[in-house]
Amino acid sequence: MAAVTHPSTGPQLEITQTHADVTRDVVATLERPSRGYLLLLFSAVGLFLVGLTTFGILVKDGLGHAGYTPPVFWSVYITTFVFWVGIGHAGTLISAILFLFRSPWRTAVYRSTEAMTVFAVMTAGLFPIIHIGRQWIFYWLLPYPNQRYLWPNFKSPLLWDVFAIGTYLTVSTTFLVFGLIPDVAAVRDKVTGWRKAIYEMASVGWQGTDNQWRHYNRAYLYLAALATPLVLSVHSVVSWDFASAIVPGWHGTIFAPYFVAGAIYSGLGMVLTLIIPLRRALRIEHMITEYHFDNLAKLTLFTGSILFYAYAMEYFIAWYSGNIFEQTTFFRRAFGPQWWAGWTMIVCNPFVSQLLWFRKIRTNLTALFVISIFVNIGMWFERYVIIVSSLSNDYLPWAWGQLNPTWADWGILAGSFGWFGMWFLLFAKNFPIVAIQEIKEMIPMPRLRGGHH
Amino acid sequence: MARARRSRKVPGILAAFTHLDAAVDAIRALRARGHRDLVVYTASPNHEIEEALDHGVSPVRLFTLIGGLTGCAAGFGMTIWMSYDWPTLVGGKTIASIPPYVVIAFELTILLGSLSTVAAVGLFSVLFGKRGVAYDPKFSDDMIGVFVPARPEQVGATEDLLKAAGAVEVRHEAA
Image 1 (cartoon, one colour):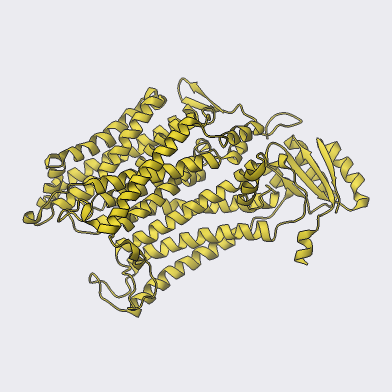
Image 2 (cartoon, one colour):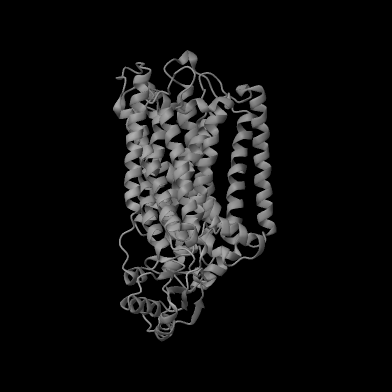
């Protein structure tokens, strides 16, 4: 595949590979890792160990090390939880929603975004457990018949979250693994020795027979159809953790679509951060081309613009409502003690995304990479601002307090990036990061009589 | 019976094609001669081959529906039953308050619908799939494979048909 630039419509997809080229090129990504890859992997493992050590200290001594300051008892851990859940959303958007829309550009990138989804949600799932303090009794959140005959409170959005995140993790993992089976079989047929035995097991007897494809295709369609409302619901449920409370700055009807758009935006930022260096490290520049980045950037621009509208509406409604608590909260977001966080969010999200109106920027990978870093930072700060600024200044001014994050907060945050990066890199080196069978589906097979169907 | 079926190889002919139209022609000709138990291997799904084979719609959808409905019923059933098992007034809402329980029922609909879909593929592809038929690693790369179960007296004519259609390789598979 290659990208050719058309003067009026921008980069277009031009397929020059054969089926055999696709298998060869993707299998080549699974060969001996380069020095750059190992450096990235060791850095990720190092960061993860920082997080693990911090977590060990928290388990031993308790949450007192973290910077919780009354009345701010949801802080960096919940911020990071929402951040990672959000990251996962772009993956399912690209793999499921764009599958239903039959968008051809998703094929080369969807596997990496799906993997990103699974590992991001896996990372997010750790945070409520870290945050609850006594981690060894986290299972109290689950509905099981305990010795006190108590059941969880199903009217609480926090419990909805347990179900939403649990379902999302299970379904996105199923979707990823299910999609991998034919590709793992293709790898099995190319490699030798002990690797062949492992891929043989992982391919669960896949041979690509007409019967297997018949059931597989139908099932993939239904999985996509089920994953589509799921992805839209998950961040809506996360947003209700906030919106169903009466805390100023949280109690907004706009929250569900605002959070979903923000989640997809942040996920697209992370997709760009991951695949721009990865395509070079795995030498698949000819498979993930300018065409794909142009489309990813357009989607980033679209969701960034929805965020622009949502931010503007939040401030407008705070003023228009005449509610002094709302007005004070939003005034302090921009001009209060943590004004720097408020402005980081405003600059990095709605404003930086508007640069993507220019095709030159959308097709310049260095610019896109820099923008993606701004998106990641901006979206982490968005959650920080929503959570921390609202809790800092509630209805009782005498109870106001400012959060001061400590080493325990930053250690866990850094560890989460290490944990996520470690799994993603291990995946990229051991499984096809580009979907072999879907790309082959786009390449017409040769015909004796020439022409296309 | 199942064990015997698993351990025995099916005798027949395995042909490899590089051209799609040649493979489709071969499939149509074989079906016209009454071969209904062909196995066709492709690296990616192909609708022309699907049409030539004329399979019905996969029954997987039924499992999706049953799984989804079970999840939905389980979601409402669990939340309502648990609410009445230890009745506590929360937030001024009724004991069993349906709107918040919709979230749980929705999530379980998706969860069980998805898992039953995948389980159905496993069931139909592995458990009820054809076993003991020949395979070649080239079929996951760039070739189309057609396996025709054939009795000794059918072998000659079938081989001629496959070669005439454009098979680049034809192999006999003994029992």
